[in-house]
Image 1 (tube, helix red, strand yellow):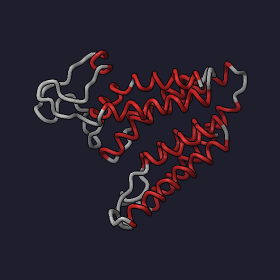
Image 2 (cartoon, one colour; image 1 turned 120 degrees about the vertical axis):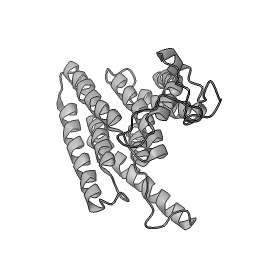
Image 3 (cartoon, rainbow, N blue to C red; image 1 turned 180 degrees about the vertical axis):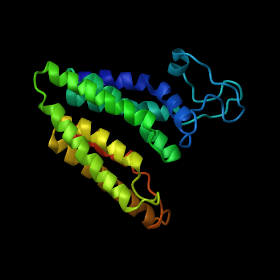
Image 4 (spheres, helix red, strand yellow; image 1 turned 90 degrees about the vertical axis):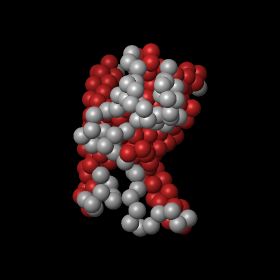
Length: 242
């Protein structure tokens, strides 16, 4: 519990930087990241301190930029707590913390522009292979890493197949398949139960949300659904209760 609270604090402190990252990367495909205010065009301040102290507003016109920091920080704190509560002082905790913060970025970006940038999913995949591989090597047991790699292939392949079923952009996308592979790597490292629970929880939550929205008249059977945040929610749930 103590480790969970400590890492939750780290996640919360990363909230402003994550909120700025969401604003800068919430752009269309093949479009460079934002470096200017979308309201007045003033260039965003540089430097890591500016990221850490990001207020969520333009310093010149005071216009809101991206998601509110007070919303991103608690989500990052929850992610940190889940990681710390599950893994404690395990050497792999650092890799899972970076993974959790990356998932927060991906979730907010997907909600904003319905895409999961390769600039984030690819580094998370590399982080998983290197970080989890190092932890397995130090623990003199490569089984968790091998299981994670197999799980990544299975999850990524499954969602890639779902993306092919409806290639019109209304169903699963290639970004969802790549995300599923990354989630499979990390959840598979923890165990097969975590993988199955995470995938099922994410899919079920997406289906439940769609049903509720259709009952409320805010969606129909042809409406596009953003799957990424639900897949990430399922993964966090699996890490918490697995």
